[in-house]
Amino acid sequence: MEFLHSVKNLSITTQIKVEDLPHLAALGFKGIINTRFDHEDSQQPLSKNLEDEAKRLGIGYWHLPIPQDSKDITENQVSAFKAALQTIQGTAIVFCKTGHRSLELANRAQKTETQQMPSELDVIDERILKAMQNVIKFSEMKPNWKPALDGNPAWQIAAYKYTDGLNPNLCASIPPVALSEEFRLTTGVVEPGRGGPFHDHSGEELMFAARGSFVVFFDEEEKHKIYLEPWDAILIPPNTPRGWRNVGKELGCLLNISGINDVMTTL
Image (cartoon, rainbow, N blue to C red; front, side, top):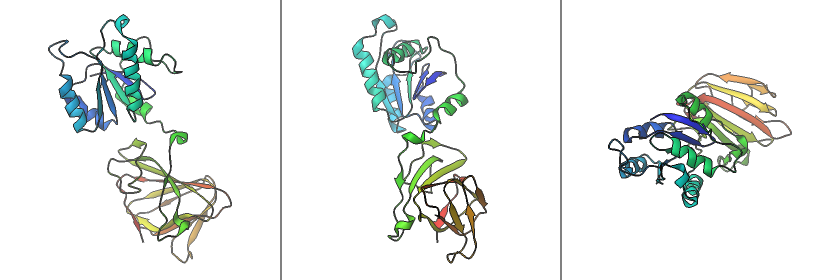
């Protein structure tokens, strides 16, 4: 299997084998579209075998075979392809033997889109492909409203999770937009007077004030505290109790960066 091109949430590849699917799942692909007929050659896996493994891995699978001659692709086939893309919640792969008929199908389906597939295919490095898939648009994110701790609305904030690992232990109900092998980035969009309750982390945490004014306090009486203004940051050592709050008069934005294995404990 070779990655040939990627645009928006769609990648073109050559023939996919059953043993490729765990790797594609790890890369974050959510749907696979097979445009080959079964038995085109003796080396290709059966569509049913690909489908069974994809389903086992939680990947959507569509078998939409089209003729090798692009002139014979019908409008119904184009419509079925577009419907499959609309169903897939995330990045998708469409493949055939060489990638060329899949490219033609994608171009036919996206001819009204602003982003077009290329007229010719080139192999694309997987690292570049992964980077292109990991663009995170804030305008496309939805906040997860963390519930008020002990009924106190001061601790209810809108949390956005940009990156995290496969098994998050912080804001676990919030899926990250991009999976990371190292970093967790969560952002709190915080009304004046609200913030994070007294807690600690098992690892280091970098807190960065992107907007607004914040107090970070190291005891519940707030005898020891520091203030962060926009563009200020603080790096807090592991197992250091602290809390934080928006002390400004406008909506604040605080970025929290830590490792994916970091564990937060509310005190």
